[in-house]
Image (cartoon, rainbow, N blue to C red; front, side):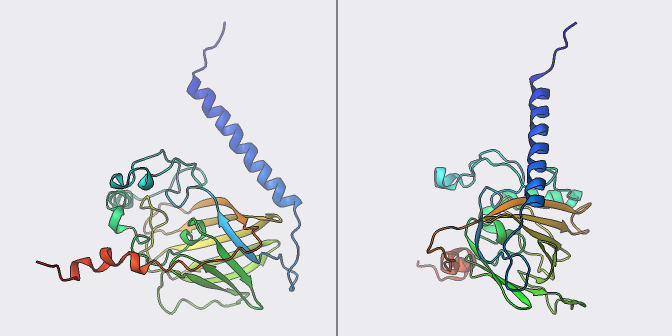
Length: 272
């Protein structure tokens, strides 16, 4: 007797096989690749890097949508594959409602629209290059958008609590083999993770992992913890690619002047 298998089941099985194969390939790359060393014997990850994908629109799988209908195709959202491990962001019930409110009000509510600093991890996968600079006891990351930057304080035995909450938080790092591990906290709780309205509170703690997987690629992983918003920690994962142009550099994106109407329009005197 022949068994009838539904096409949806076949597609799901093929997708599972592809995901497992991809994960195996990444693990093998990490295990096999030995990066060049910097002056201190740790992997040399100096350079200009950029994420390629649609995570800045939405961290999860998403279809094409109108986005900002008044802008036509320019304001639309392209379809994309998610970077959330397991596919689900484990919101508490109230937080899921808040995320949906964010989505509905995104044209003016998204902090990116107002040229606010992007926060962590969002700064990593905005569609602009960023530069990693390895120093003696600190690593600096410089982003173009809103002139954002952050300093990673390395090998601090007793990290101090952030003196105040900020958009980019405070970061401490150390090396675990070939992986740079960064703990970041002390956030305002105002930043979003993407244009879809995914968010966290000031209790957010982000653990980032930067692992060289080829001369020109890093595997970026970030574990998100916030017990006031989520039911459990969750993770995103994506590759970062080195910009190879001889003249590659991070260009300052001074966007404040483009957000003045949204920020201050209600204060401006209107002509009668």
